[in-house]
Image 1 (cartoon, rainbow, N blue to C red):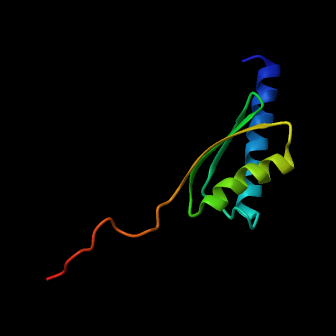
Image 2: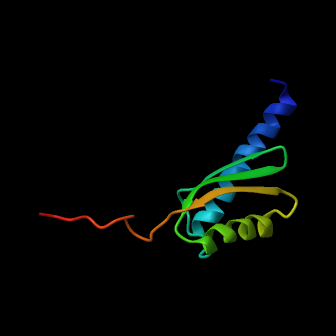
Length: 90
């Protein structure tokens, strides 16, 4: 791998770690379990959150920190509505 590519890879790795920390510590997201990758000017976030509001806030937090990066939000919202049917215990 050429030196220039190694430098970009290292920068992307550290940027992903920084954004992951932001998402974990921001009260709008509070999501330490999300996976963040950066490459080619695109931030990709995967994982699950508990509300649609937290999912939407991911884009806000990243864009506020780095408006030059494109955000690809592949986070899903965990369905906490309960089991699909009730369980009968006998």
